Length: 312
Ligand code: CDT
Image 1 (cartoon, rainbow, N blue to C red):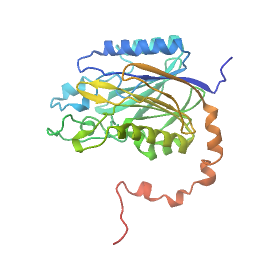
Image 2 (image 1 turned 45 degrees about the horizontal axis):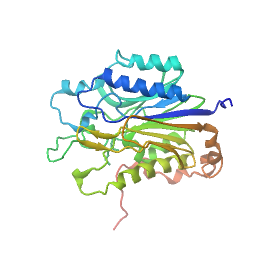
Image 3 (image 1 turned 45 degrees about the vertical axis):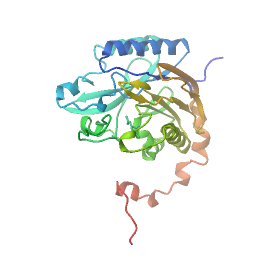
Image 4 (image 1 turned 120 degrees about the vertical axis):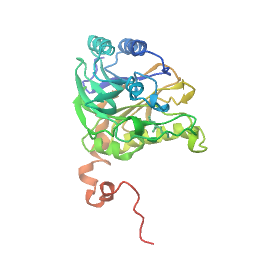
């Protein structure tokens, strides 16, 4: 049966661990293998994780800027990533790729959306940077995103691509309802995001491991439902340089239901047919924003970052 032109077959391309010394060429070969599988399975679009070209380098403290900059791309595509663009265009597959971007002296945790012809049609730079800006030697591993990246300066744009309205965000962004709502208010129909999330985050105290996946699912499923959009959440998983990263790659429908899920902590392609018209029902009923939202009553959301307690 021919696909409807609002049906997007998505491959969520989970990655297993990437070693500190793994070269870009080696990693791109792994991405190409996943792309080949996506082609065999009839995918229109492949979503790769956050910082998909290197290990998750913010877990180390580096004093020397040169050591940090080796993880960044100053051109996209560059020599090492060009084969990905070429193979995807040959297959007629669009893709979303997370990488560290060096642009005009600024450094971003970024991702791009590439259409089926190999053109970059969208770029997003991570807004909600987690972790800390200073070296914390007492921690088992660092989380230095606040030191190594600038806060994204592009807002939360969406693009007309793949026959629908597409948006992106990155990892920690998925925990924040503002992320989804900003795109929901622009009619988003599919949000693509990649993540690097430790299975346990012991440095700040005890948190049972099951909570990492509860919070992963809870955030993305509610973001999907409350904004009537598909959400594709793609993990970098497994034991990376001694740090256990959670998997749990998910494809979530606009109902909030999980329709496909990763089963491993390794390179794995999770595929689902995503009908963009499935967004219409909730966009036209319970989450018809124009009819039901009351923005006059939401002033605090943009007035303050922190909590404003009521008077004593
Ligand atoms: N990469 C990234 O943003 N990771 C963070 C770790 C926070 S630990 C709860 C995340 O939100 O998954």
